[in-house]
Length: 257
Image 1 (cartoon, rainbow, N blue to C red):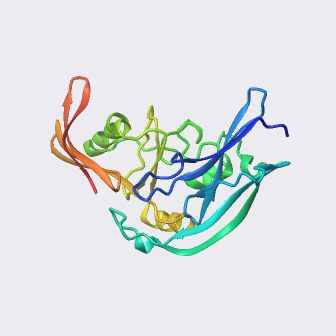
Image 2: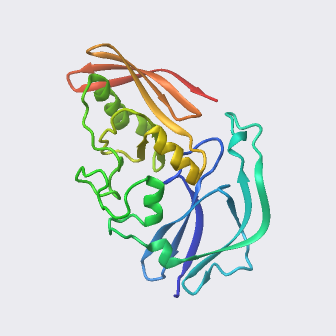
């Protein structure tokens, strides 16, 4: 196909960042004529594969991507923070994975996200706007969230998403476990998907343990609140105060495992 450059790399676009290091795998394909594709392989590191360098293996075989890999499947039961006792429940070396480019490119609803990416975002590959909030899944930072704030706590939480969380994460996925509203979040440089406990259980059964994210809000009065943000292995506490220009946040403390 005359590709000038093909690169497989690790990314957190579809995987929560943590001390475990289980990033997702993506590939960029430069066709040599100014067009570059960036595609998800639908795989996460140690779930169960680890892609390894192999200079002797052509990365493209016609319209098929092929990569060398080892099986190093992490045992979710061994995960702690800090991850001092991680071990694999299955290991094997010297494999080759072959992926048809047509399968990596498939976008059934034409929304700009491949079907593999939609699976990782828990969105509907047959609906370009899964939450029907007017933003396509590809452009929506919260592709499952269309709820507007119904309480002061919701309002502070939404403002924390839009004003606070983005200071610490960019270009990655946050998975939130919650029984509350799936808030509409816009104008941020990350993605968040809010899953109910049963949905998260099914998601983890398919993709493995996910480090979850949460924003907790405790109203002190109508203009003041305590806000706690957890990224699973790091986080902090903030004081929120409503002013004439909206809610402002002041850091009170920060922690890391």
